[in-house]
Image (cartoon, rainbow, N blue to C red; front, side):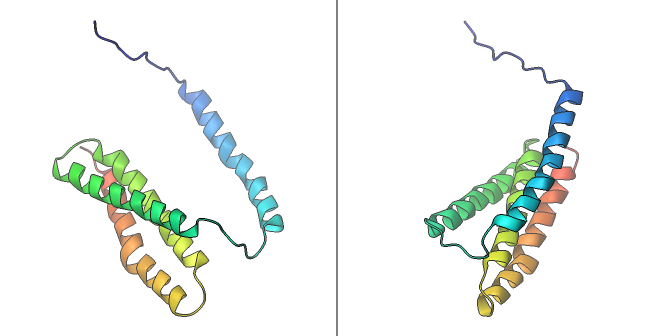
Amino acid sequence: MTLVAPQIRIRRPRLATLLTGAGIALVPWMAVLAKTLPQTVEVSHWPLAWIGLDAGLAVGLAGTGLLLRRRDPRVAPAAAATGALLLMDAWFDVTTSAAGPEFATAVALALFAELPLAAACAVVAMRRP
């Protein structure tokens, strides 16, 4: 006996409306956050957060590379997700770094590593199989 997963049917117009509405709903929420979040905060598990993000990047980069080498069509979503993680990593590295050498290092890594890798992932994600 073979088990077959049931097909989930999502109507595109409804999903499109939901996603668009969610994006629009975030705008006032961002205004609330801009007015209420503190300028500085002490964070628990800071190293774990960064190591987890870097672990996700390592898996994404290696997985995208392997899928690309195999010409596997699943490379496009892997590349898109990895590119998004790289952009997020660059943003948070730069915006959370202290002034001085730490900030300069974060900007250099963003400009010469994370952003070029994200652009390469975007190219892979947009290619037709």
